[in-house]
Every structure is written in structure tokens, then in C-alpha cells.
Length: 162
Length: 331
Image (cartoon, rainbow over all chains, first blue to last red; front, side, top):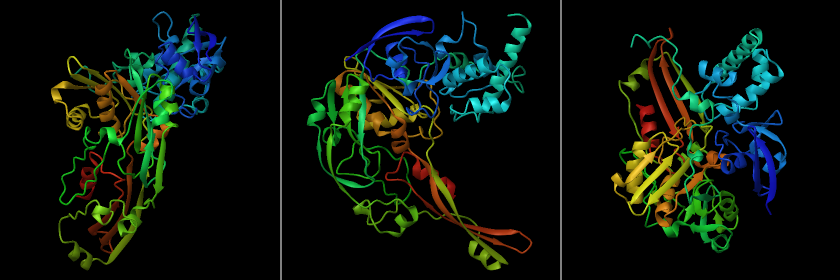
């Protein structure tokens, strides 16, 4: 039997009726059409499906949509504000932090959480923070550079009072 | 040219990828689209006595269930492009015929209006198997023992000898011959995006469009037209964003032909997205060979000759380019 859920996704409240077993990632992709969040492994290992749920990076392939009832969810589509890229998105573009792009949305969401918790992380802290996200193309070096770029960007903004 | 050489360039495809607004196969949704799921072999080698699809056919949301009986005379074999002398190419059917020869081999295809329903119905198909001894070690397989394709008498796909110079003279002149066995382990390429296929047939125009996460759209068009039996100019292959391939998507797969054919039967677009488990079992692997090296050398280290015997695990079936890759390594 379907259950009613009300989930705030990228700032907009969505009211839907969903099967209790519907995965959050399928809710986002198939019900709301937000296909930027990808499915890579269905087992919480690869991190391609990472989204923010109430401010925490969560792997949406192993969470049910009904568990997100009442929550605030941010997906990759919700990171850029008014056409301006999030500093982490900008970093990935500037530092060639992606090739095929499949892991990228999850990687960017996880990286955004790292910087929210620690605006000035070391390389080691960035690598530790991204342990749950797999990339097969880049070798991670440029991903770390991208996150550092975003951290530096944050500092510039803080200094200029943005 | 002067503006670009030696300079770091920002990629033009990145804005859509970093914002999650690019399109991989699974991101494309068409009206009246159905979903396909596959029942796959749980055995490495087994005889199929019977497949009972009746319960699956009655399951909620299920539109059709196909087995070899439905497709044997309709879809051609999965192709191998090798043209080596005496190459043995087993008849690779899109759905298993009388027996299965690898874990993950497609046995039946379920079409349903919802992907969860398609996956559920898979569990309702009853297959009566007689398990047979499996062959999993390439060196053992080469010796004989359990033969997978009885018509061949052994498990050897082909033998190839090549080289140049006088290796016997080099060996005879050597102060020392170094012998080494080197194992190159089997690897699963594991692209972040599993394989996926979306097929749409327009009965009026008699045109089939297949979206596939492939590395070879052009080759795929030629091969699928042959397999499905439609004119090549009525088949269009679209490769949207591809989430990695590493050679594993450099192949023509049974699922690609099946999806195209199923769409032609039903008149609905049909989509299949590979699960990670399917990806490990059914997407092609690489390497998996055992090399025996003999190096003829002088005391001062000068190499006079190199002899290599390579035993290659070609898998249960030859894939599109399996023999060609091996040949290039041996010459």
C-alpha cells in the first residue's frame, strides 16, 4: 500500500504517494525526474547516489523514500544558486576533477559536506572524507585539487565579506 | 592552434556533468516505456531441462516473458569478429538454449510496466537445471578433462604460433636460460555506470532506435542490424553520456539485440539497466592469462631471445574482439 510522503527537495516541498519499498534514489530520479543522482552499485559502496538529507551526506540507494518523509533533501541539481555554480562544482570544472562524470554528483555533494564541516581541510582530511565515493577515471588526485580549490574560494569569499 | 597547445583547457562537457543535468541512458525516459529484467544462470555449467514461466506471466505488471524458444529463430548469434585459422566459435545465443555455460548468462527476459515488477517476476520463473562440472582454471581447461562444447572434443578455442628470428639458435647460444611463470589475473573492468539499453521501435516508420552505454556505436549498428534482421538504415544507435567503459563496453551484447527485438514485438520503448551484480557476472572481463617465459641470455645480461607460451582464458564464449586482442599480444 502506498504511503504519503512530504519531502523538501532542493527547497521545494514535494507531496507524493510512494510504495514503502521505493528507494530514495528512485524517488528522486523516477518520481521527481532529478536524474543527476546516479545509481552505481545499489549497495552503499560507490557513493554515486550521495545526496544531502537534513544536512548530512547520505547514500540514497540504501534509504527508502518513506524514511525521508519530512526531511530536507539537497541533490546535485540544488547546489548551484541562481545560476552560480557551488564552489565545489567550480573546482571540479577548473581542476579537471572528472572525466566520465558518473561519480561526480555524489562526489561533489560529499565534498560540499566536507567543507561545511571543515572549511580548510588537509589533503588527508579530504581523502578521508571521500572514502565512501569511488571514481574509476581520475585517480582522485584532481578531485582532491578540486576540493582544495573550493576551500580556497571559500576563504576568498570570507575575506571579501561575501 | 597557438591558442590551445600547452594550455590547460576547461572541458566543454563539464557544465552539464557537474550540475547533474547530462543524460546517461538511465536518465532518458520515454512515454509508455516498459522495463526489462533478466533471469540469469546461477550455475557455471548446467543443462536446462525445463523453464516454467507461467507464474511470472501472471504476476502484476508483467507484459511478456521471453526464453530461447521465442527468440532462437528470430535473433542471430552474439557475434565474434575473429577470423583466425581454425578458430572455434561456439554458437552464442542471446538467451541460453539447452545449457548454460557461465554464471550470469541470460536465461529469460521479463518485460513489465515497472522495474520493481520486472525484478519481482524474475523470482517466479522456475528453471529445472542439471548441474554439470565447471571448468574454472585455464591451465586445467587446456589439459582436457571436462569438455564444455562436446562437438569440439576439448576446450581449446585456437592455437597460434608466431615469431621471428631463430629462437632455437638463441637458446643454444645462451649462457643462461631464465624461466618464469607469470599470472595475469582476471579483472572486471567495473565502469561506474553499469551497462544500459533503451530501445524504441516506431512501427509506422519501421525504425528502431537504440540508446546504449557503448564504446562502439558504429560497429554496434552493423552487428545489431544483422542479429535482429533489419536494414541498417532503419537502425539508429545513440550513445549518450557514458559513465566509463574501460573496454567492457567495447563489445556487442545479447541484451542490446534483445531489447531492440522486444521493442519491435511490443511497440513500446523498453529499457534495461544493468545492476552491479549483473555487471560483475555478465559484462566482459579482461586478462586472465598465464604466461610461461623463457629468456635466453648471455652472462653479461645481453638478451638473445625470448620465448613465450601464453594460455588465455577466453571465457565461455568468444566475444566480439577476444581472439583479435589475444593475437595482437602474441605477435
